Amino acid sequence: MFDGNETDTYFCASESTRWVLDQLKRFTYRPNWTWTARDLRYGSSPDVFSPLNMDDVEIRVWFEAEDTRRPGETVKVGDRRIVPEYIVDHRDGDMFALWFAGLIRGMEDHESREWLRRDGNIYDDPHAKRDSRP
Image (cartoon, rainbow, N blue to C red):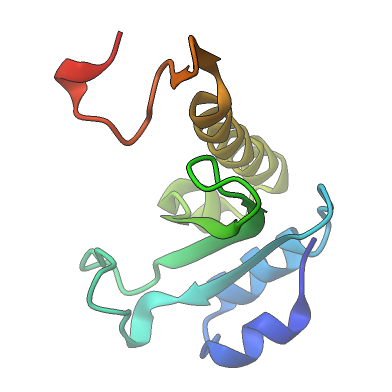
């Protein structure tokens, strides 16, 4: 669910960012899921790759979930992605919807891999090194 208060922490000056925020407002999902967007034109945190394109818009999606390694505890799960330039440039709401749905599906897939167990062990740990996966 979009939480308009989250955008207060980001400087959203560009038309592109406003367009993306308008698109995000159209979506709802499971309880406790939140998303927002920000304009990377004015910089980003040091751990986020920011290409030279000054009109990039980053989406952040997060939710609280039970920790798969510490039962009874919760963890904040999140992802952030730069909206593809072709979607923003063409202001294509349908293409944005397909892309955003894919982002959500990817997060769900990641979480399901953490929860699936075989003989009590995580079967396909998305955090494991490549050579230790089945």
